[in-house]
Length: 395
Image (cartoon, rainbow, N blue to C red):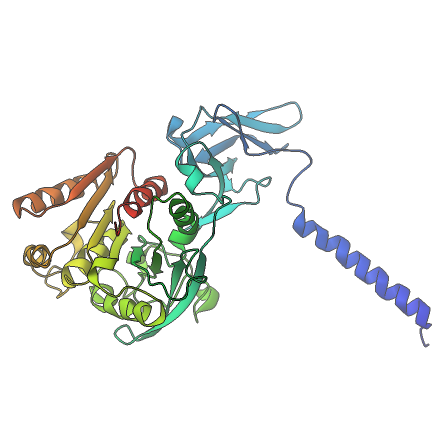
C-alpha cells in the first residue's frame, strides 16, 4: 500500500520531533534548581548534590582547608550540602564521592582532565585566579601543530600560543618560551590545566610580560600526541609517563629537543637566538628542562625548574644525556645565562631533592634564584610559578 504524501510528511515530522525531544536530554545536565558550586562573597564555596538514595556524600577537592575533604549533610529535600571555609584565590578541581564512588558534579558542566581523571572545576576570584579567567583584553591564539622528528621516528604534536599582536603585526618577531609538562601530561596539559593562554593574555595586557610565543611540546617521547589523539586512537589511554614504554628518562627527548626549536624557528616569526629563548617545566618537565639546558648550553638564556623531578636515584646516569652533570652545568655557566630559577613547595615530595640540588649548585658556585612556596605537588603552585617566571623573561 502506498503512503499518502501528506501522511508521509506527518510521519517524518513525528520522527524528527521524537528525535529532537530525545536529543534535548543531552543538553540538560542539571536537576531542577540545584546550584553547585556556589562561590560566596566571603570566598567560601557551597556544594550541593541531589542524591535521595545516597547513604553518605563527600566533596573531595584540591584546596588546603581540611585537606580538601568535606562531609556533606542531607537536607529535607534530599539535597546534600557542604560549605568550605574561605578559600584563597585559585582555580580548584573537585569531585563528589557518593557511597564510596567518585564522580563529577552533575550541576557543573565545566571540567578538566588530569592524567586519567576528570574533575569539576571552579574559580575563586580576587587574586591569582583573575589571571586564569577570560577578561576583556586582546587575545592570543593556541594552535595544535605537527612536526617531524627524525630522531624519535615520529610525526609529533605540540601546542603553540601566539600573542594577540602576532597576526596583526606581520613584520614583528617574538621571543619564545618552551614550557614542558609533567609525568602523565601531554601537549594539552599546560593549555587546559595551566590556563596558559589566559595567563599570557592577561599578563601581556597589563604590561607585566613581554609579548612572546609559548611552545608546549609532548614530553612522552614514544607517543605522537595526547591520548585519544594519535594513530592509536582510543587504544592509547592516559597514563603516567614511567608506564609508557620508551618514554621515561632515557635521554632521547632531551637530545632531540633541538628539532622542536628548529621547527618553531622555521615556521614562526621568532628571534632565533639564545637571548630570546626560555625553557621551563614542571615535575618531569623540570627534569627535562635541566637536561635540555645543560646538553644545549647555547640555546636558552632563561631556565625555570618548577617542582622539578630531581630525584636521580632511578636514572641511568651513564646515558649520554645524563652523564657528567657537574661538567655540563659548568659548561652552561661558561656559556652564560640571564636567569636560572628554581621553585618548589615546602610540602612537595620532591622538596628534599630540590634542596639537595641547590646545595650542589652552591658547591659549583653556579648562580640561581630560589623560590619556595607552601603546599605540595599541585597545579595551583605551577600556575603561580608561571605567573612569576613569565614576568621575568626577555626584559
